[in-house]
Length: 222
Image (cartoon, rainbow, N blue to C red; front, side, top):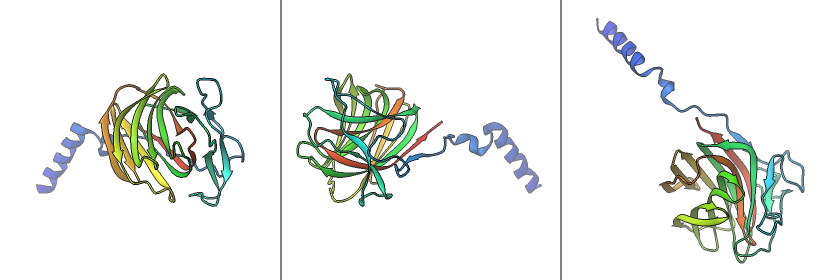
């Protein structure tokens, strides 16, 4: 009788809730860019460079070989070492349009006097409208922004010691208005913002910041 009761209870729960896995959000396989199979001295396929307001390319982005690569032998580097205060060097990746996503990248600060470090872009409509989280070793902080028509508005700041000798990881998970950000696996931000509903992903540096990026990973969540 006890076994029969347990069986009937399980059937009732299945009827009420459906299969257990139905409660878990489905997602696409993880897409990873480690740049090792990409040609040297050029952008990877489907990576589009933005432009500054004067029409110049937004940075000097290219795949290079580096002994510092976190997954050898190649990285994607932003190498322009001169730039005005509000020059945002960025690339956007085609075929990555998403609303809900799990996105991360490793970055290594190389040089910069006016600015240093780099960031992740998501829900980008274009190179003037997107969300951004960036880490700056000169300021020793991490900040999240929305950028509208090329103008940044800071949403939150977090003071953080950032060692320029080591790789670090930025990680974003977003669903609806909720945005969660992690730095080296540590939770940094958890907030709600509704400026952008969907868009593509990308990478970002500012002014004269020379930065290496590796192991860009994207999962589009369902």
